[in-house]
Amino acid sequence: QAPLVQSGGGLVQAGASLSLSCAASVTIFSGYSMAWFRQAPGKTREAVATISGTGLYTYYADSVKGHFTISRDNAQNTVYLQMTGLKPEDTAVYYCAGSRVFYRNINPRDYELWGQGTQVTVSS
Image 1 (cartoon, rainbow, N blue to C red):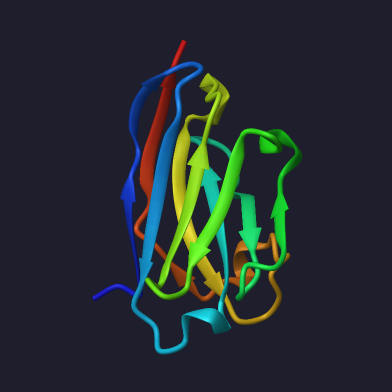
Image 2: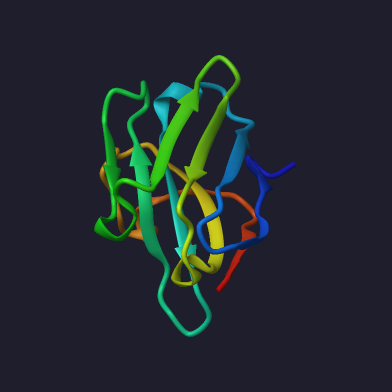
């Protein structure tokens, strides 16, 4: 069983909302900073949002500030990404990831746990 299992994603029209979730199978979930990355065809993987182990601190890429919200429920070992006002440029494969180093890590190499990825497609 993979340590991180994602759900959600799909095809929506521009301006719509969509939510992603990621369930973790780890011993101490709060010990991991969590993040959402995305990767479009022909582009590098980029950090969209991160959250500290207890949820006290968050980070967002400039491109998604005010539209995406990351949250976590440590009692359920789950991290979420709520996306609103979606644009065609948000189209990508979205990945959940976990790190034991620091919540503001934006380098994919700093993350040791990864979800399977889920496609988000936004039509114009």
